[in-house]
Each structure stands twice: as structure tokens, then as C-alpha cells.
Figure (tube, rainbow, N blue to C red):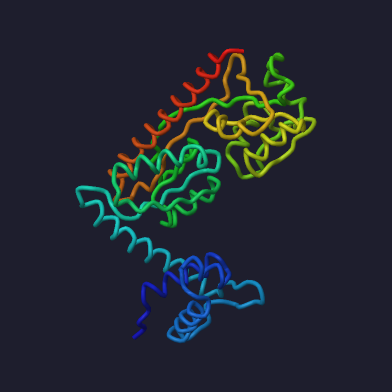
Length: 313
């Protein structure tokens, strides 16, 4: 009889995901030798190797790949049992694994976490910040409970709850303050700074500028909104950023911010989770906290802009 344990399954899944003993051990909060010993014990009990071990990376054998599919299914089922137990309680407590895209996380997360903690001090919030494709993958694999993303994601297996919309603004060098705001067609002829491939915000900006098959004269990529705004401040080009990022990203850069005339570029933000999640009722309540947090942040930003406008010259 093979007596594999859930702990061994979690170690195996972490190593299969990371392909590296050191990173897998760090994820599991154990030492690398301890992880290696557990994997070796699994291989001995199963009578076959699960990984091909290289000098820098390990990869699954054919049997290991088959086992990984079944192990992930088992771990998802176990996690759902835990979720069922939590869902039966009057108050949502315990672990909440929430994913957030990078163009939201730095600006909205502090308010969200503060409000959730005040609502329930027993929540153990784990945050994962990465691009939408990775969040969808981790939701499907049961490694996240929910995610805050730009909608729509159009995944049949996921529930989407729209929370709020926000406009994009144009960020130009400080010397451009007061100049006419270029049309979206004109942006195609300018040096446009955008986030690198993989960010949905990049795709939204390109769509607004109607840039598809025809590329602009100069298109430069950055890894974060902070990088883009600092590059604008250095006179390298112009960029678009979401309104919620303005207060944080422009305070240390010599830039000017302007709204477009007519059609405003915007995005719709919402929360998503698996339709099969036992925590659906609780996640719907949390989505309302996220919506209220966004409203609070927007009000603070508007009040700050109003106060600045009233300062004597």
C-alpha cells in the first residue's frame, strides 16, 4: 500500500511548478534538503522517478506529468473542503488569497486591506500581484480564491462582478502644461511609452490610440507605471496612466497631467472567482468592500485636486 501524504503532494506540486528545489522549498517554508528528501521518498514509494534533475533546473518525467495533473486535482478538492467549512461559519475568517494586477495593486490595495482588516481581524490576507494571464491560471489551479482585474476576462468557468470604472489620463513633460491636448490619432505620431507585453493596460492604451496593425513612429516599453512616468519627466515621451495612479506616480516627477477631449479612454475593474467556489457568498461581500474602497480613494483624489486648485498663486 502506498502511503503518500498531502504534505508530500504539496511539496511535489511546488517543485513541479517552480522547476527548482530552492524556490520550491522557499514556497513551502522548509529547507531544500528536507524537500529533496520528501521527493525522494515519494519516488521510492512509487517505484519510479518523478523529476529529471539538471544542474540548474528540474523537470517532470512523463510519469511525473501525469501525476502532477492528479495531484493538483486532489489539492484543489482538499482546498474546497476547507472553503466549505469556512463558508458554513457566520463570519468569514482564515486565509484569503487575492490576486491583483500591477496597475491596481500599489494604489488600491492599502485601502482594501485596511478596510477588510477592520471588517474582520481574523482574515489572513495573502496577496499575489501579477499580470492577468497568470492570475487566471492560478485561479483555475486553486492557488487563488479571487482576483481584481480589468474586465471582461470572458472565462466561462469564472464569475465576474463589475465594481467600478476609471478614466485614463495623459502624462506629458512638465513643460507641456497648458498646451493643447493631442487627439488620440496624434498619439500615434508621438513617442508613446507603454507597459511591456503581457499587461492588459498596454492593450487598452493601444486600443484607445487605434494602434493595431500600424505601429506608432516610436513605441517604448516600461516594466511599471513608475518607470513610464519617470521617463516622461525626463522628457523621453508621453504615456497614459489610470486615474487612481496619478497621486502616487506624479508626485516625484516633473510632469503634467491632462484629460482627453471627447471620448475618454477608460477601463472597467471587477472581481473574479471560480463559479464552483464554496466561498462565492463571502467573496461577493468582499467585492462590495473593494468597490467602497475604490470610491473612497477616488473621493480623496478629487478633494486633493480641489484643494490644490484653491491654493493662492
